[in-house]
Length: 517
Image (cartoon, helix red, strand yellow):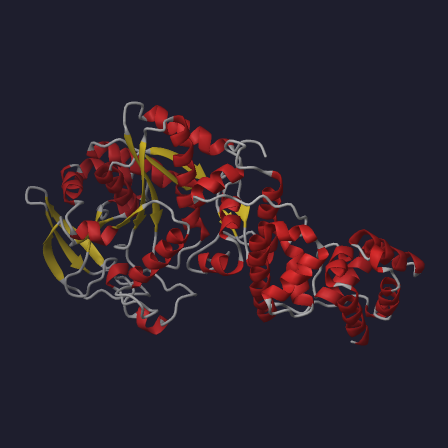
């Protein structure tokens, strides 16, 4: 595979922007209002690829990746894939770090979400520094920045309000006070600023359909844990205080990034080198959302696919939108397996070069042409629940599987799990030409008549074509019928190879079973 250019190009941009610095700090952000998804993980993995490329250019450079959780943000709505909605409803409008954990495992809502992200990143052995917004506010790490925001209040307000509607400009403030009485953050309104003392006055007066203001009024310090700055100002605050040199973001945040960069410069900092990427889409082409829980969760990747397959998926050009979903997961896994057949780690900056560096381990070179999709279809068609049994089918079909025994045993395990998942959620596929069901017996007899020496994928595939021709059937419709009746799918692997891995007895049993339906 040719070199992957985008990490190389980004590393050059980063090093050019900071030619004399010996230490650079890169950041990725996480909004823990819902379970972490692939988009969150992608930022980490991709940014680490840039670190790998930068090290190739300047081996002496020190690089630190900050994974920042905005857990002082308020909960505006309840995600559909989170339990205990009734309990969470009572806490809407409060900071995520002060809401109880709906899963009952940690001290807070954001504590659970942060834990899930770190568990996934740690499963790769990624080198990163985790930072919590609530912790940094609480430790006073943002105090100097909050004071600078107060001092530059008018300039920042002028920059920000130029981007919002006229009716919102007078009431806008970079600060979101946390009500001392009800603990909510989105119900408060700043009524006065005392720049000399770094204090503000507020009123808890803004109610919505989701949360109700308590009416409390008070005066609080701007520093410490009493306030949070709004999103675009908060981004600039991080860059300024943490000295961030590089950050990538989705294209939906382009305007936010431009404004945050301006605010960062007002505070006296240098905005990081930016990089915009396209969004991740679910199998239907919709944007992935933590609230809806579409796409593939990180937990699903761990359960149903090799970790390397996810990284390989992410290594593609970030400037192209990428679809993901449980229905297309087998294809994504096979894209990875195919790379293992064609790439080598020695090809500098190939996909496997980055994979080996990210995973800190040798990547297997796969010789067998056996695909994951074929393993999955075998597991589904004859209801195999034992990964070792599925591996024996694979080994009988292709002896070269043994050269990557551990790898293929893992693939068989994932195939079993994914087959069980599909069984739970699989929709019934309508067989469009049920009058052809008796032809399955003809196909069975023809295939069984083959000598063992000729029982291979190509020969069986040819026989299936022959059955269609002998009965004057449209080839495309015939194979669509076979997929529908045998696999409950609209499409699938080459059936000749599918039958070859099943073997004669299982092939006959499957065809006879469907013929009898």
